[in-house]
Figure 1 (cartoon, helix red, strand yellow):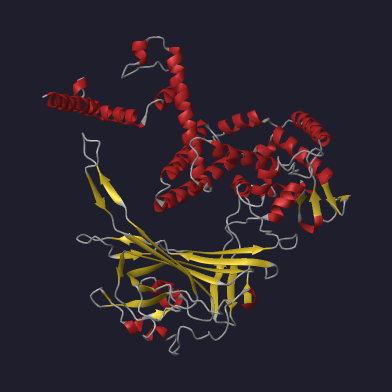
Figure 2: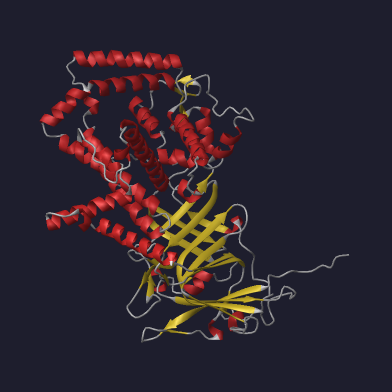
Amino acid sequence: MANDRTFYACQAVAIAVQKPQNDGSYLEPQASDYKFIHGVQTIGLNTTFDFDNIFELGQLEIYDSVLKIPQIEITLEKVLDNHPTPYTYAAPSGNLLVDSKNRVSVQFAIYKDTENAGVSTPLHTVKCTGMYINNVSYKFPTDGQLTESVTLVGNHKEWSTDQLVDIATSAANIVDGNPSTIDEPIGGHVLTRRDVTSMVLPHGTSKVQSITLGVDLNREDLLQLGQKVPYARIPNYPVEVTAEIEYLVDENNMETTAFDQNTNDLPEQDVSISVGAGWYNVDLGSKCYLKSVTYGEFFISTIRSGKIFLQDGLVVHSPTIDQLVTSCQKYNEAYDQAVNDGLMTEDEMSSWMKEQYLWTSFHENKLEEIKKKIENLKVDIYEARQDPKLANRIRSTIRETENILSEQLLHKNSNFQNTCEGFASTEKTSWLIQNLTFKNNKLYDFSDISLQTVIEQWYMSFLPDSKCRDLARNEPWKSLWIIKEKSQLQLFANAGITELNHNQKNLIVWSQMYDNIQESLDCPSKEVIEDDDMLDGWFIVQNRKREKEKLEKDFENSTKNEKIKNASEVFIMAKNPEKVKNIQSMNSATSKAIINQRTKTIDTKGTVGQEEFYDEKMKLHTQKMEMASRQAKSK
């Protein structure tokens, strides 16, 4: 018969704040300074060693490898149980600006697995000093316990067989001045969803499924001459505080904030949470702004239904093929009417705007430059995928450039509604909405809500690509897409009855796109696939590679002379600027560098012999080295 036993984790962790001194140093904590952390569930300890590889001209091998600063990262996750948390120990003042400067010492004790509790001399101890808080998050789920997760970063770690701190007998067992032992029951219970006593949320407290709060200091090393390790690790202000709130959604509590490209401000929101009868209080203040809205199963179900659910019980159905034909007839009739009434066509409007200097070839070229800049930035962020800090800076530039692009496009299309095409498009859309909008299964008469309002809400239901991409690669859609053929699953309720709507088509396109990516021989990593900007960069890189290969193949096919094909320098006649770009794109990165270097040399010296080019000098040097090597081997 098995014994009734209580099992304890044979590890323990304690934390202490290092006190700053007048000379800028930090005092090593004493045993009495350490606080034992109760309720720890998991501890992640990562140490990263990176090298700077140094090369020299004329040699392919690495000249030297210089060890960078070792990076230490500790992640502690504990349940909320009315005991102080790692964050409250490491940041006791409650002032982020003050506590962000704190350095803490963290110690782990590892005991024999035959011990029934971590109260004897440990086998090993791990000590990390000079650690800074880098980020902290809180999770409040409906299933499981409420938790805090803290990540500390630093550069110092040591292992020892000595007992650095007697966690079992020292003042590390004192919690808030009250003596206790490790095995003493806590004065309450581990907190779960029932212990969330009050919430202030943007859309009320009904049907809340989970809340995740977080702050990331995104620290950077501050270095000084004469010292390898950082002088300090400073936060990047302003820090970003986030709150992710998951609701069960119906038509009464859907996100209804109206915004489009003309929106300059979003409403300020208040977010605060109290749990454990006020033991833990988290207040994000009253200046929280909506950043994104993501719908899960409810939204996928809505897309699959083929209907658009608007406010006040209005439902916009998808059109049948006959209704689409009729709407196109309405477009043609409206277009002819607009022409007879003297409205300008889109081409005529473009010419008029050019004459009035509202949109000229200069503006058009500028627009193309902005598009090209975004394209290059996305390649840059893909190539910076191993450098998170650089990637974040590039991402910020991408968003800024996209905003500029939106402004330019808005200016370019500002008069579209005054053209024949714009008038006809409005009439077509109006006819469709009038014949597809229902309330209580009856065609709506627009007595309470205007047609224009319904059209605006209908347009707002169109998901941007970023949302469709997120839905396509995640559950619950991902599983439905995988099993659709084997299970003969009908993805959309309206398939075969009405036409697929905008969101349905977009979801299929991106689902197929992600399938194609997975089948690619050069499939990117999961991190790249889940990052829209990086994946766009990968698309661009692959497309440029294919275009380059096609141009080279076309050149090979068009040139019969083998000497020209195998020449180190090939001159191709260009008939126009586009042909010049195509020819230049055939150069590899090395060839482009050679062209730039030769151009600088010619500009500097005026007249240059072939042997004076830097790349030719390197070739000659390499040949000499190879000849010397062969001669040495022949002796």
